[in-house]
Length: 453
Image (tube, rainbow, N blue to C red; front, side):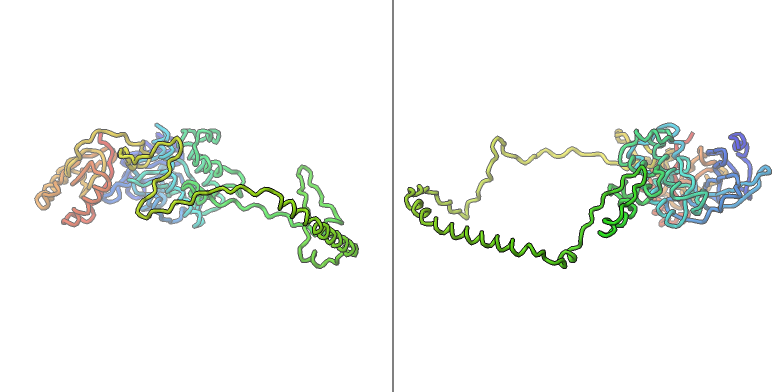
């Protein structure tokens, strides 16, 4: 399908009444739209139906996008699969279109994805379509799309997943999906890519082995083929092993077992030889005894050795502590009193460039809509006056939370009744819990919004 076709579907209702509010992204085979599921924003993915492809099995994992509803629908005379899922904040494909990831960002992204692939492969499943556009950020989490997961078979396999993952690592670091760009990939990511792109399945790393490498632990070595059996002594003496053309056959030297050597009879010539050796030993001892007197006289006539007076070691005084010996040419060491320089540490969000140190600014207060960051949303309405009435009612009952109305944004056409904005995810969650405990609706939720237009 063309992009014009997907764009024309925006604003229409499909798949049982879902309103396609805005086109988020598309390819030739699929498109993703912003829609609503009850009072919640959601994503709806349309994909051309393939009768040969197996059905997507229900599978859940914390790093897989949650599928809320799935089915098939006829649109414009063609058959489509549709998936209603949780709404992601951004796609890695959109980030790569403008810049490459740093090695640190890539390692942070890769860890949860390898954990997810390990889980899928152990369940007999494969992702089937690993590429940047199917890697999504939801809050502080990195997740795989789930609508392409398949049982392992002809369509998808763990080996194909690992090859696609290797190409994806190259692409996010170099913006090129070519194996030749591996020269620009740093270690240990290069080790993972090299083993992921191995054409030999016995040498290709699994997702679990790649996780060990990413964590700084080398994976267990790939088991080698069993060695050829060692021929016996009789076989070696009677027959010669054939040599395969183009292959050098190893020379095997047979080793006789110790037990067999002990059972062999002693040769007859060894007895007279031993007798001769013993006779020579007796003659040597007798000859040495006759020369002992001359040795003694020489020893007696030799002048006495000079006596060297060695001073006695000093007696240690228990009340005196010995000073450490200073090394020659080394100045005495003094304990440094200079405090270490402080370091800045911040946790980057997924796909985000390393943070820059900026002068402190005043944190937004609850009820002040900054248009960016995490919001605490109490309710959403399609009409502004309804949202204003709810905000006024909440202000009378719960003035400490300072409820306000946030206008529609680029990703949400509803008026939101909020009690906080421009917050961190931890601050927003803490405020939500206080609000629910203070009597606000139990379905109050937090959501990250980009800057409004």
